[in-house]
Amino acid sequence: MAEAAKWYVVHTYSGYENKVAENIKKVVENRNLKDLIQEVSVPVEEDEEIVNGKVKKVERKVFPGYVIIKMVLTDDSWYVVRNIRGVTGFVGPGSDPVPLTDEEVKKMGMEVGKKSVGYAVGDHVKILSGSLVGSVGVVHNIDLENNIVTVSAHMLGRDTNIEIGLDQVALFE
Image (cartoon, rainbow, N blue to C red):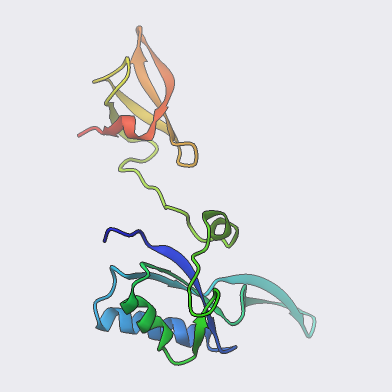
């Protein structure tokens, strides 16, 4: 797909959020639309309630009456979501769905461009660029937010911690 998936908000009948999310997931699987509709979410938060003097954990919907969907907006994906029983429409002017901004997605607790690397803390990695190219070191810290990995590499006769870009190292095999 040339177009990247974005997060959209779908309005539902109150109390139908989970049923709508479940039905969308079924349709996506049955029609093999995983490339268009990638994630369906009903954000919930855990809360504590005191009932009859006892603390009870309950899940509350963060946005009652809404389902959050990560999808590539096409006529097909719009039609599929719009025609699920319990959906009243997309959030946006008229019938025009408006995607959430990265900042709105972050505030809602959803991921913005989830990053991952092929190595973990304690793994041996090979340095791919910079002055220590070809050296092997041990990963001490991975900072996905700042795109930095801290590696302990052997330099000048001793181990030294260096911070380099996430893409400047690869798992040593």
